[in-house]
Image 1 (cartoon, helix red, strand yellow):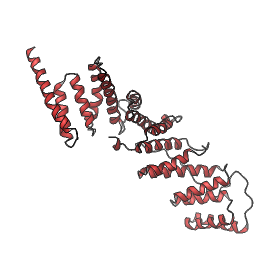
Image 2 (spheres, one colour; image 1 turned 90 degrees about the vertical axis):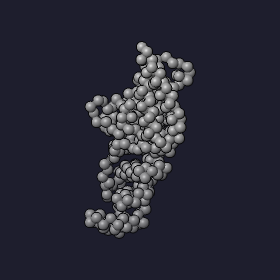
Image 3 (cartoon, helix red, strand yellow; image 1 turned 90 degrees about the horizontal axis):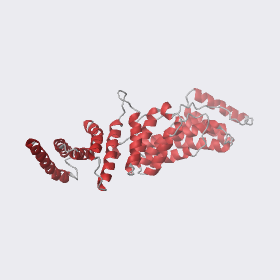
Image 4 (tube, one colour; image 1 turned 60 degrees about the horizontal axis):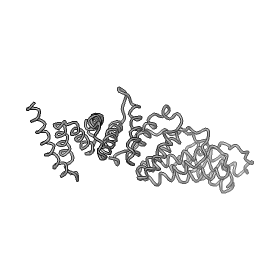
Length: 341
């Protein structure tokens, strides 16, 4: 089931208009006549949408004035537009090296790193994606940047680490995403998704009570009558699964108190998963067992028959087939007892 999980919701992308030929905060020295002529030609090439020519002209400028941060930034803009991501990133980095307080290449670099990380993640190259995103995470945070970019980057880092099975680090970044100020109002989808995955991380690590807190929080975000996302059914499944695991732990210690109340609480969550055809054999096993705890043997038999029919390739099939006759005996005995009454 874990492998079927994908990123849900749209990332909040920063709308960033790359500014060409803008002067940085520091005062630039007057360029030579040759450089001025090349810059004028480059600007004309950009206006005429002759990007390759503009790139070539800016590179000529850099060869004459290698310390010009403004030109490095503008070259990065054009390379980014051409889809030459690595070269664009290198150009923005050089502009910042030349002038660390120059905000435009900082904003551009952060955006380029995010987009590169998002693209690599979409191609399931999670290690490469994180190399971009971790670099972004280590950069100064400019005041002019929409904070949604960083929240999205943290979410994506969490998602990539989840797929790399680095669950502790994954939880850390999903937590950073969820903790972004105002995220629940500015980007409720991203807030909900990070909450969902935090629940997943705790479930995977066996922290069932903590996991349930996150899933309850997630489900509460979508009240009755509201549009419900793809993961709503999964969240309800995990609510039931967490409660079942907690019940199992109690039974293993010999604590059978309130077993019927616990089973009755679990069943609605698992029934929702079954009704929505969640492709998990575990849900049928847990649901069947809960019906046994409630002595609703007819429902238990029906659930186990569905399990056997739906998962004929299961490695546990023989166990399920062996248990079904036992359930049918329980059902017959229960029916006999009713008749005697």
